[in-house]
Image 1 (cartoon, rainbow, N blue to C red):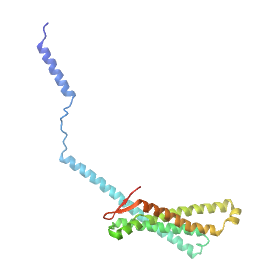
Image 2 (image 1 turned 90 degrees about the horizontal axis):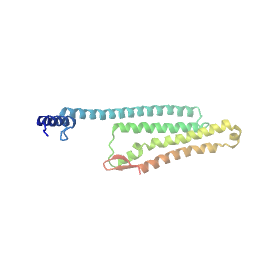
Image 3 (image 1 turned 60 degrees about the vertical axis):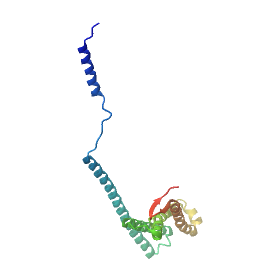
Image 4 (image 1 turned 180 degrees about the vertical axis):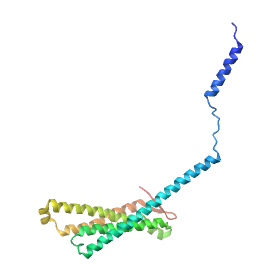
Length: 210
């Protein structure tokens, strides 16, 4: 049986060319040009700078909110004292006082953060634990929630159960809510702060969740 050697060589060359077009060389080296590296570096720096810019504007917005809240609640407190309504509306007065203190420390905390005060030594530790931990703002805020719930219950009893409230609801019950709101809110805030926060090394603030 005779075999055409020319046909075999042509078939072999055809198979070789098809394999070369189907499979890629595994030893091919992927290179990155300096221009591509520069573009990647520029993109990452632009992303980080934009995130810092968003954080800065957010802090400025919080400063404005804290300032407006402090001013507004201060005016309400002054008006209630001037009109002698702070004794008749004890829970309402306490609500505005809690909001005033919370907004004031929120404003002060964000201003100190924007100033980038170094947290070094004993002074930095005290500043971090007391102010930058935001416990001074969180405590009155939680207390205002307690006080607001007490106002809701009081109004409900006086409107829906007017006769019962007139006979059973005493002033000492209402006044007892005021210290409870302050103590309860600050107890929760400071227990969370003491449990969560540690000041390490050179004054860097770390929040450690146990």
